[in-house]
Length: 151
Image 1 (tube, rainbow, N blue to C red):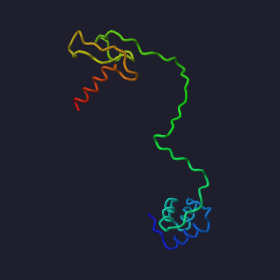
Image 2: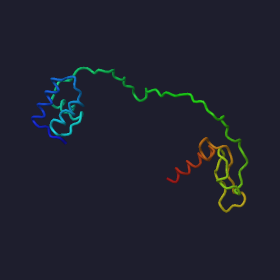
Image 3: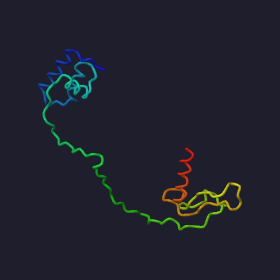
Image 4: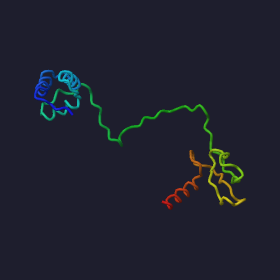
C-alpha cells in the first residue's frame, strides 16, 4: 500500500488537470518513476474519485452494448463429420456372465442382474445404452433412485 504524500498529490493533480490526454496508466507510470513507488492505474483512478476531481473527456472508442446473460447469443458452426454416424446396436438378448465386463461392446447396457454367486442366471442387461452412458434408460433411472435412497 502506497501512502500518498503532499508532493505526490500536487503532482497527480497537475498531471490530471494539465495533460488530459494522458491515460491513468501513463500517469501511474510517470509518478512511479518520479517518486520511486509502485502505482497502478487503478490506484490513480481511485485517488481521482476520492479527491473529487472532475471526470475526463468522453470515451474515445465505442462502448459494447450490455447484454443480459439470458439475451446473449451463442454462435454455432456446422461441422462436417469425416466418419459416418453409426447407430447404436439393436437390443440384444441378455449377455451371459461368462463374458467379462471389459469385453462388452460400447452402446449396450452393462447393468449386472442377479447376485454374484448365481450361476446361471447372472447376466448383463444387453439393451441399447443411453448415448455416452454405460446403461440403458431404465437402469439409469433405477441407479439414480437407488443412489437417492442411500443418501
